[in-house]
Image (cartoon, rainbow, N blue to C red; front, side, top):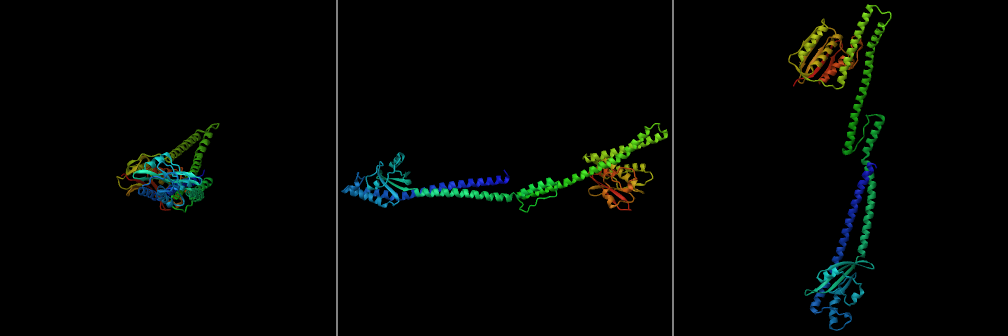
Length: 481
């Protein structure tokens, strides 16, 4: 069952139950109200009859008519007619009147013979004899009757009972009509509400449908640039569409990063394969020469061994550089602490002068600059930058130290030919070597390793260069707080 159907059924059911309860309460209230009105009307009609009977009986000294009193002549008959005629005359045409004695036995008068008997239950008779009124519902050929029984009390003694009944047929028909109307109206309202709810829920859930359709299209086409178009209010569904679009943006960025990473990985594997192929080919060729029969002269064998040692060392350096990069890519964290930068720089410059005694290497900047760094990693970064300046530039090399509000800044400046903007954009790529540097020994991994080690120390490595004006590699490290 779809969520649209579940929602529609849910609030249609709630509406139907509400209408059913409302209709039931209204029906019961109307039934009680109309019954109370009839009872109140009967009470209003009976009270003057009882009061007249009591007054006449008290004034005339008459207690009860004898059987057949309506046909009697003489003083008792006159008294009976004086008492009973007002009761008969005061009743309404639609009401049915019966006059009983204190035991509930009808008097032998024409009025009682014209109207059917209204039986009184034993409990009702007891109440009447105790001086209390009693209401009962009975039935006749036309339907139900409401019978109101009122005792006649003279001098504290119950001397008779007046029964006044009214048919409830019209009221019951009206109530049945009301019940049918309520049920029919409730059913019709429920059906209309179901249709309206189905339509409105479809409109309300349309953004979810669009989200589902967009997700399906993205999964099918792998196009994370798609977005859910939502122009409605910023309600729950609007926020859902916005959240979904934000998730798509993040997925798009992640997918692009993964795509670039896979491309870099493919390029990396291709470059590694290319770099490994040359020394391995040389080693295999030299080994084949050593296996020749008859053996080569000793001088040639010595040259071959020197070549094998050189290529083996080259492979070892390549593997070492790749290991450093692999550790960096794996997110291996370096232990950072306070490092006195000037000491490390001077140590690196000393090693550089040993490697290139004919080059001028200068250090400038204040002492006492403390950075949050790893001493070994910082030394390796500076050695790479210094070795790069020695290999690719001529003239003096300067290492300048400075500081700003947040960083210790190291500039490795050379006087080389400089770099074009195109070279600056790719100089930190792995295995990248420009056409002018292909004759220089190396693998094109040095600057990549230097940047990875700098970033592992929460620093940054940048290049500043102009063609013909030399290059400066800038290392920024966080200052010790």
